[in-house]
Length: 140
Image 1 (cartoon, helix red, strand yellow):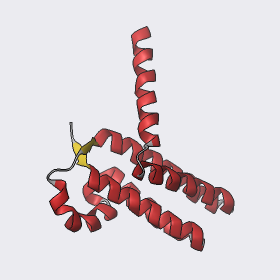
Image 2 (cartoon, rainbow, N blue to C red):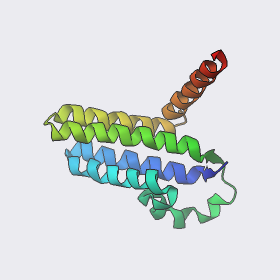
Image 3 (cartoon, helix red, strand yellow):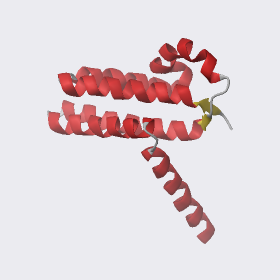
Image 4 (cartoon, rainbow, N blue to C red):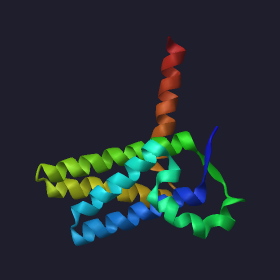
């Protein structure tokens, strides 16, 4: 199973929180669009294409060798959820629903901040999804 070092995961989460805080405080929806591009690139091409990881990599060289890791499959799932929230945010802005756009962006920012602080909401959803799927397969 492919693994991603936790410092890379945290750098992405910190980048998400920072960009979304700026976007919401300064009311700059184009920053949310830029973040969407960063996250879609990471979703399609993997962590090597994530701008936040690319920027953080030189500073993390010494920490990576002994770092704990997370499953790439789990990170891909979390990234998909994030892209979904950013897409809903951008669609809301396109429809002129600015408040909804900032709410969707804020939800993603809150999830990324919670993950930095130790509670991964996406991981919980992923686990529940896997449990549901396993129960469903056992019934058939």
